[in-house]
Image 1 (tube, helix red, strand yellow):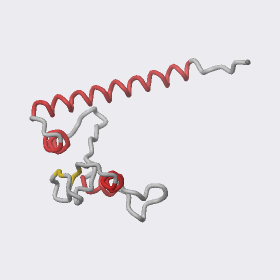
Image 2: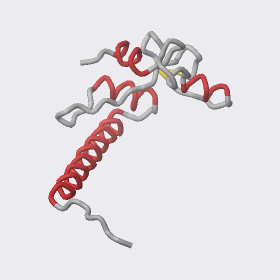
Image 3: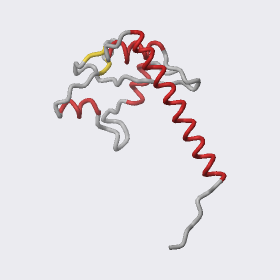
Image 4: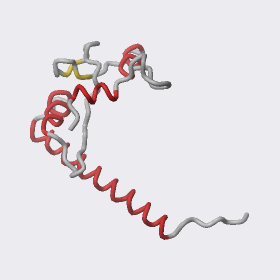
Length: 120
């Protein structure tokens, strides 16, 4: 399982990142006057320039969202009460599982009924 630091290292671009992924989204948005909520190195959520880590909502293979993700992203960042944060996590898991099922169904239908070339 990825730690928050490893997730940040993987998804936060630096000047050494391969092109075109060298610009940091938070810096770009802040330069345009946006207020950006991010995670600081100490794990606190704030709009400070040191809060340069994206909040992650990782949905596991078994369709679950970790409790620390719910606490950090939904309770601390969004200010939701615990019960609302749990409902949001459940709703996102249901949405993700439903979307994945639709994708698989579409892929299976295409495999069984491939599109045919039509003459104009």
